[in-house]
Amino acid sequence: MIYYHNNKPFIEGVSIEEIARSHVTPFYIYSQNKIEDTFKKLKRTLNAEIFYAVKANSNQAIIKLMATLGAGADVVSVGELERAIVAGVNPKKIIFEGIGKTNKDISFAISKNIRLINVESIDELQRINSIAFEQNKIIDIGIRLNPNIDGHTIDKISTGKKTDKFGIDTEKLADIFQVLETTKNVNLIGISCHVGSQLFNINVFSEIFKKMKKNAQLFIDKGHSIKHVDLGGGLGVTYQQNEKVLKLELVKSEMDKCFENVAYQLSFEPGRYLVANAGILVTSIITIKDNGGINFLITDAGMHSLIRPALYRAHHDLEAVDKSNNELIAYTVAGPICESSDIFDKDISLPKQKVGNLLIIKDTGAYGKVMASNYNSRGLPAEILVRNNAFSQIHKPLNSQELISQDTIPEWLD
Image (cartoon, rainbow, N blue to C red; front, side):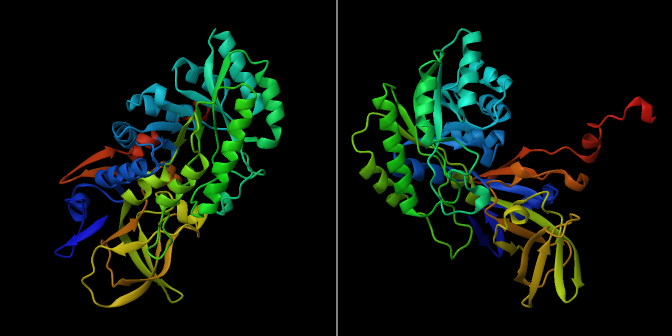
């Protein structure tokens, strides 16, 4: 996504250094053309409905862009549901997921006439039915199943094993059928699953497809009109040049073999796949120091700006904007947060750097700004969208005074 002209880095037709002259680091940059190209390739190859998983990057501009491309929205909270509606997503293209829906959340979703609510527990199914009864409505629902499939990913992003908290255990289908017989204010129209993020193994996709087809047939045999089968997200994203790449054509091949001549629509709910490789985080070096023979570059971005390396030990490629010095040095790049885990990379070979230089942390379009915090009372990063030769700030964070003003000191402390 980054290319160089006269040794200067550009995203599309915009100089990264030009953006840095008008915006305080750290900040995220997203390429609109990259997002559009990725979406179109995914849609063209899989030929299925696409519901953008808003949790990956919930900026209004990104949601709006997805809607203009024809995507629906997959939301996991009322906040995300409100964001999707405000961004212009047709409510009939919004799916409400999430294992922690309160009665208030459910009531709000019903009032907005969204496509469907995906149910994640028998208790939730009963509560949805009761609330719909109180509102004198019959609403469309889906059942999110836990197919007990190991996605061969890291534990912290696994969602489809029996021991994970998500979905309804497929061994409890008999209980679901029994409850559905007594819930008259819900209309079951679909089933879904999601077994985790960063799926690359084609055999895992094959197993998902076979189990979901089998489960769909079980519901159909019980007299339920299944119109939609959502096959989840989790499509693998490459974060390093030497990593394997998910071949969408193989995923499509497994789909075609499994779902030949079925009467229901197929859909996916990708998030990371659509935006991860379309974003970068730009940060400045604020100090350079040597501790115990380790050359530290301390940056103004940290785990408050991008938590994935600290939380998941996730790797993001990193490069220096200034490559003019021929001397290479092994640096450890660390943030300013008072936590030892606030490290972006260790022993990375970069041209010799100086204070004030810019660094680029790559592939941060997903689970970057959306998971950022004000820890240590530091500000959130801005977000900037680039399209061709233009760029626009799409998120302006609160300054320190605005953050402090959100606190209230009670009278008895005066």
